[in-house]
Image 1 (spheres, rainbow, N blue to C red):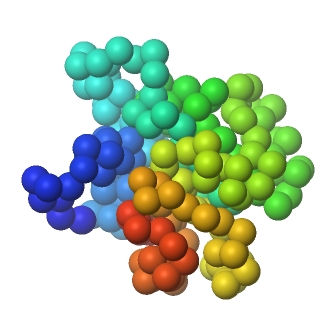
Image 2 (image 1 turned 180 degrees about the vertical axis):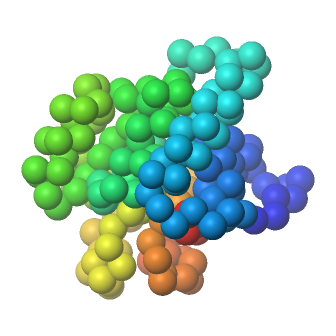
Length: 177
């Protein structure tokens, strides 16, 4: 993804926050353990460089929301919290499975649970959309009303950016690690 000088600071923060996505696009990480290890390495090095420049007590974003909390989402949540890039208290989750949400909140105390997808969107500057592709239909977008400042990061296979733009999002980043 090419960033020109007129892109907002939030896009640059997004790249700082998710360097593993950039790393994985350049490499062929097919095993989840390789993806996790590279994610951890990238977040750790980014966190160290950010701590030198800013106060590490707050996250890169006011809040990061995850819609869909499967393995892909958890592979992003873990290094964010462990590296100090985003405190658990500034992460909000929503999933249709309460069992999944309970498991993640037990692993990472302090994470907030949204009552709905819209609740997560309202609380968050950055939304990571990690639902299964078959769940991304017209009904999905009727449940969400994004603001013009909402940034959406999609990690959903086979869903073009136009799907999200047609769904009302104006700032969309798509990545497939």
